[in-house]
Each structure stands twice: as structure tokens, then as C-alpha cells.
Amino acid sequence: MFLEVEISGNVFLPPSELDKQGLILHRSIIFHLLEDIARKKATLDHGYFVAVTTLNQVNNGRIREDEGNVRFPVTYNCITFKPKPFKGEILEGNVKQIMKHGVFMSCGPVDTVFIAAQKMEDYQYVAGDSPMFISQRRPKIEIGSIIRFMVLGTKWVETERAFQVLGSLSGDFLGPVR
Image 1: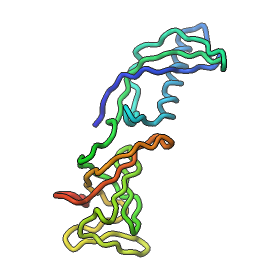
Image 2: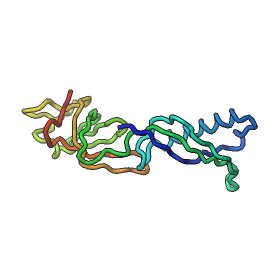
Image 3: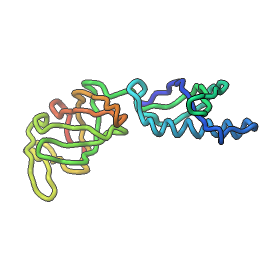
Image 4: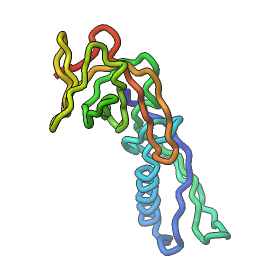
């Protein structure tokens, strides 16, 4: 789910980017804001940042004496990919890696979704050059498969600025879609 949220933050500009002409200063503020958003990638409260839609307000800058940079408080609207997947939610992911203990998938901006082999009813691991999970009643799971799964839990990893998801295939209409 995509949300548009209003966020307040600070943009720091080095003295070399300050200019009497407001347009160049405004452009530098926007450029640094976009860099900050790309570097942050996501937050626990807002989810994954997709795009800045509007720059609502730029307040007067204040010189930071310790660094010499100028801090501009800003308010902007940003589209985010919902704060986090919630327990019990049904999602689809793309299988990236298959191991004996389960599969790793990606789901939208969430790069780490793990489904343990114990949470894959009726599936058995088959080793080889192209490892896979097979079942008597369901399609096989291999790299590139699209899997519908249920979220069992999520975890925010601050160092990676990303969510990790634990999923399950236990339930109706869950498993390989294609």
C-alpha cells in the first residue's frame, strides 16, 4: 500500500552551495533533500521512501558552528510504501534463493523474505544444480517462482534500514502462483 505523508526534517548545505540567487539555493536544497531520502531508504515509522512529491516549506537557515554547514528546516510530502507488512497479511514474492532450510524471496521493496521449510506444507527439498521444493499436490518452487505467502512476523533492521519478513505457506490459497 502506498501512502503520502508529510515529513519535517533538516537539509544541511555546505557554504560553497550558498548563493544570493534564491533559485540556485532552492535547487541545492531540493538536491540534498533527494540525496538524504535515497540514503535513508526507509524508516520504521514511514516505511520505504518512493518519491518526494512537494516541497511545502523551507525555513530560514541557521549556521551550525561546529561544522560550518547551514541547516534548513524543511517540510515536504513524500510517497512511501506502507510502514511495514503486518502479521497475517497475504503478499506475493519472487523466489531469489533456495536452500535446504527454506527459501529467500523479495516482495516489492522488501529484499529479505524468508519462508522456512517447516512452514511449507507438503513440500520436500530436492538438492542439485537447480535446487527446488516439490510437492505431490502443488506446483514446484524454484528460483524465479512467484509465491503467495502469509506474513508471520516482521523485523526492522536499523543498520540496513530495511524490513525483514518471516512468512508461511500454511493456509488456503497460498503457494506458487506462477
